Length: 295
Image (cartoon, rainbow, N blue to C red):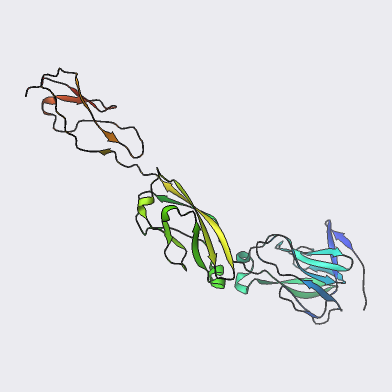
């Protein structure tokens, strides 16, 4: 077997020398060649989306190898690199964190690149495997929402739904069972008990949701903010008896009223004040005698 032990640099990047067999077939590293020199893939790894930078495969003994589309040790999309690891072994590894949904989901995560090995072009297929993933989310809902109102959808990509057919569960943070899922397979969050939605009582919920299919699972935090609604003051009918000889300016009664939002109240007499016999303080609700009273 003819072997070479060469190295050089282009644009400050190490060019890798790699030896391949005529057909190398692995789940993540596939190179097809009509007449490549002898070589051997000694280690092969699975690479999953959104993992840290990691090797895909280690190839023993080498000729120089470059990505033709870039003429460099890095692929033109910057996803992969060819790295000299140790001795006569070379790594093909991820150069960045790769997302399956934007890499090659329609081809089951397999994407083919053309590389130059010893001045001969070869096709190499590098595969990223899909993972079931669910994202953290923030949702807002009005405190006057009704039962069964839809407030949000737990987001899982269409590719994850197709590949894993997951079910959805609320595992924590659902104080007083204020919320529910419309169905385990849907991921739609609805109002389960509208009486629990009170901004003044609980303004924020942090649901822990689990998405899984028995083999693969992921969890996420769904933050639900209850937005305040300006609710009307609470005031009841009130009956007061006074003496007819009260002088003008005398205080006859203080209105009893509350506001659910603890806002400041203002008061006014809007009817029934025959002869303008009474007045009311706009800020305090105190009712005064304004004229002469005659039973």
